[in-house]
Image (cartoon, rainbow, N blue to C red; front, side, top):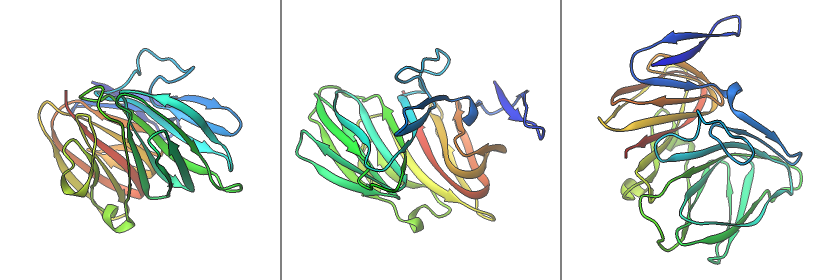
Length: 252
């Protein structure tokens, strides 16, 4: 496997590494600027199409969205997709055809299982403050089930130097149950802290860095970078500098 390692001069060189790692550098993501919405696409989405980046395992969308005050996505439909928003700054308001309405602030997650079909809107309730979020879609492991919506707040303590499970395939550990072959965690990491976990054989992992810097199995990552791990084994997070990231453990 060949991944990209940045040199001190800022150019990219190709370095072969063991461990089944593949880097998705932040600066190589797709970009869109709609004025009120500025976003970066880790995978092909909307007008951005890259055959080399169509998804990873059940992951299909990771959009790094900045939404201006008072703006958002008008009512639109989804079906047979697992969708969640991980709020980094500001707040996001949600309304849907199931009758749900909520506002999730920084540190919170809103999750929707679209199932047989649902219509929803999302917007920034503040007129002055921008909202920053990761919008993430995964393929379901079962289709045409009843749609569902749920929210969860993750405290700073829950994520501090450890993996906080917030979505899982079976709802264990007070997590929300996602209808996808995935367990999804959030963590923050700073100087002197480390996290170690084991990825089972036959599983793949994706790490999306939301803030700061962190090293994964020695590979240094910056804000906006994604890292795929394509083989099982030890996964170690070190060298955190104001880091916050989402960790996906997925299987076929």
